[in-house]
Image (cartoon, rainbow, N blue to C red):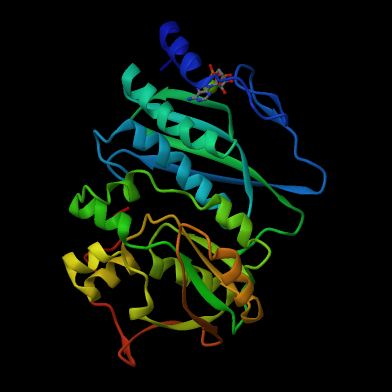
Length: 312
Ligand code: ADP
Ligand code: MG
């Protein structure tokens, strides 16, 4: 359905902000946006949707929805080793609720501005509440980090504490609620890792699933110690160490980086990451076996608890 004139004014007022980037020729207001990719760089493009009732609860804080819808896309660009630049939004909204749109924009722009990203266009239509964002970034030619680049013998690492976001969502934990509502995409960390990482993926579906994706793409395997998983202390206190580890494996929505580094670069990695506020944990070493095994107390462990599987 066509937007009314006053609704269109609201969209323009909330979303059409002066362009801050010198590489944006035409932004919101024309039929399409025009941007310039610097010589020697490649354009990296990703799209992710958040749908009410699937990816966030009906009635969720619009500031969080605005933040997350951008964060999940920035996380994908980061996992390629790309620097984020430009974003467009397709907003499906049942009614043009001014407070909701303003809350959404507040969450969106707070994150966008921290990473020097311009909103260059979008579309607004009536429908069930859903947000689709297309994000574009740049990477020097041939410098992108793919899922498929790992070699046997490379070390496997993860940033942060997987499982925390799922814990916050499932148990409505106030203290950890930010990890689900306002995940911090690892943009600067990914750029620092780009020259060292042989393969990279972001943890969205769940650590177990995303490790398998990386291993499949690189045609490799790993035997990983369950007890080497970095887990937030609060999860262990509430669930015990094994259930907490399973939540780390299957919870999802962490938006952490999972990456591999050749053994000869692991000291350099330790030096680069030593002053980061986010921890970087070595999970193990990749092998030729083309399968993932979890090891607990020296024996292969098959996680039986499927209750924490990613809900979307
Ligand atoms: P068109 O009919 O050409 O698609 P629209 O009326 O949908 O144009 O949009 C007008 C301008 O506003 C376009 O530049 C479009 O990119 C921008 N726009 C519309 N909705 C949004 C939104 N939710 N976020 C950002 N820009 C938007
Ligand atoms: Mg349109």
